Length: 383
Image 1 (cartoon, rainbow, N blue to C red):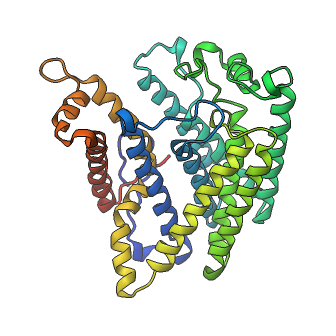
Image 2 (image 1 turned 60 degrees about the vertical axis):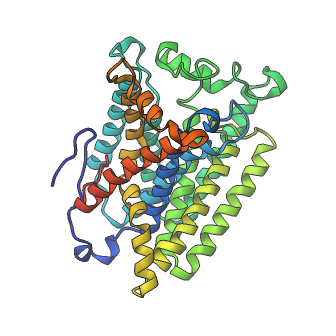
């Protein structure tokens, strides 16, 4: 076993032919996560007139779907853990590693080692809590519909909580400077330890919004259970039905509290989960049905999808590594005091108005080389 630096890692070194059939990975999950992280590299790198921005408050932008899709697909992947006995120490270790890594990540991003203003909540911390909740539910309730009922209960309860707490807010709805999640974050963590770089100052991101994320993870768990338990010809109808139901629930829930990523409102959780489950259905059709065949077209499709699988197998590395790379490029200088980022933009200026796409393409090409090299060595970063 070999370890990559950084997060605690496990490296899968077993050849595919040696893996028991019941323990083999689903190619569709790797492909789906690969698509998400590839999109995240491109969309978060584009600049200038093509820069992608999150919805300011209510509403939905394409970039808003990236992290929630990652959370939903993480829930789907955890369905595979049911094939193995539960090891409580490993679950505890995974949770603690992700929490610690999230705090370390926040320290690096804030470019300061001042602990008195360390941001406590974060994306890795959210993944840790959601993963813990999904695993516990999956182990206690083995049926595929029980997690769906729990997700529905969470969504309804969170909707009622947001509405009751927003009675004095404009329009009776959560607003940037009048919302319960933000108040709870500041009361629990302190204003110096919450996200202070948002367009609204200290944006909510911590405790209460985790309920919406847990619902997303549970919907992903149901999707994973459908993929692993249904007959292959029934998987696509099952996933499409789940996606349609989630999209319909989003429309209904938006009638009470609109879609808002910053609060991870129930309507947002359902809409983002519907998109992720639909993506998983498409990837299952291509990778597990089409690419699983031994025919020449099947082998060709596997070859085409191989780089995407490489991204998916190291999705955690790429998803968070791109932020560290961007930070390094914007702070490290070359001759003349120009940052590496500005120097690269200058070298690509010949692309004219398409220069932002050329820059994003260079970033993506770099990650293609990294993930391909790691995939060939079967080195994967995971908590």
